[in-house]
Length: 268
Image 1 (cartoon, helix red, strand yellow):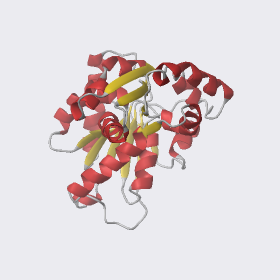
Image 2: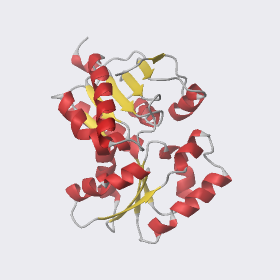
Image 3: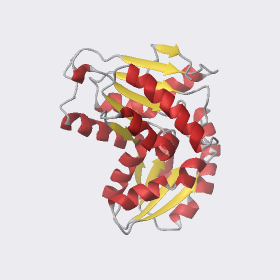
């Protein structure tokens, strides 16, 4: 197998990163993908930096053993807290993450320089998006809103549900009051409620972490001449540290396709 035929490695603390896999499969339909979701130890958001770095290192090592050609951190919490650790372990292997891709897209989209971020509590507290935006463009103002209730609602499948709509109406006003013109969906679950967000925040440019990451991966592979030339159906392999109740149903909703090759492995 030559370098271009190797798989893209994607990982997340749980199931949310499957929205990134979905976007990658649509943007790069010839690419093989290996996914790891740490479903036994999710959520990462309540854990210490040291623990998140330790878990992320174990996952990175596993994916390196799968002989991948590029790594994607499809988890905002891991990207915010352990991105440097993952890159150190990966060495020369390219590593992309949802925060960098989202910041790039937001800076390109905003006209006013007022950018909102919806994310989990840990991602908001890390200030990672504000730092990433500031590194790309001076003078931008980043307003963040933690939205802890959205993940369980989305995993319940309540994508266009009155309760989800009411929850958004609690979370959005502080952002809209700051006259944002761009909103980063700073959690890989949130792209599934993008239609609802578009209704509740009309006229606001929505930055979808999954599609922006897929585009960044496409550019990185093209620059390195690593795009897979194969025309046969790609190989998708899914690894998890636990197969909890309803995992396949939730995962297939996120992925928008069947999960065929699913294997449970223990790390650490």
